[in-house]
Image (cartoon, rainbow, N blue to C red; front, side):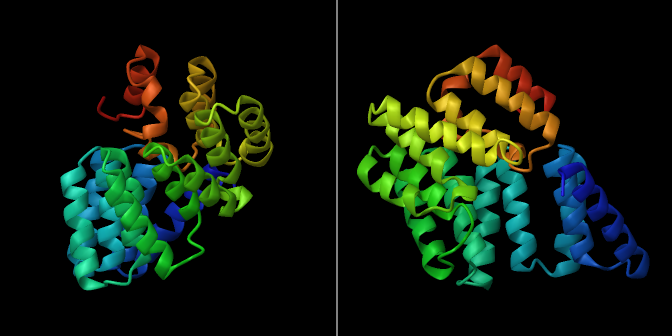
Length: 254
């Protein structure tokens, strides 16, 4: 389903759930996600999360959702606190480890910690979608390019194999291979994950192309767009006034 259709249906279903049971915590989690991921309404998202945390008894799923939204706003310490609480409740919750690695450590430059968290999450759930993509990105940031490429090649095409491979080839100065992987990434993900193409162009320092694909992602309401803040692949854009304007459009702090 297109995001507009999917999130609209999700909202209606959550509201119906609340009409049947006003104490339904999961309905508030869904509404928090819609407000953050689809609408970029951070105050509303946090209000729904506060209600969900109260009603759910702070269960692990709600805590991980709260951590993801906190990290999207750049509240790294708060996100870390939520995830620590989630893992204390459920030490085998793969989503908590993956969120800790990809949403928090990777975006705060703690690449060794990110690698450890991602590997633990993948040990628990080996087929976590985009898990190898994030691990490959983490290794890329550490300059461990051969290892990064191995992880990238293990990823499913739909989950970022070509995007990760293209970035790694570019870092290896294998421009022709990077261009070919970029072509494959566009063929695979242009219609449903345009933000990943934007990040790849940004890493290659092709800023105009990166911003063009960010606008595509914005128009499409790409569900990964809401947590682009401090993504290491976008570092080349951080001083560009056009990128700062884009973050303002999403109501994100610069």
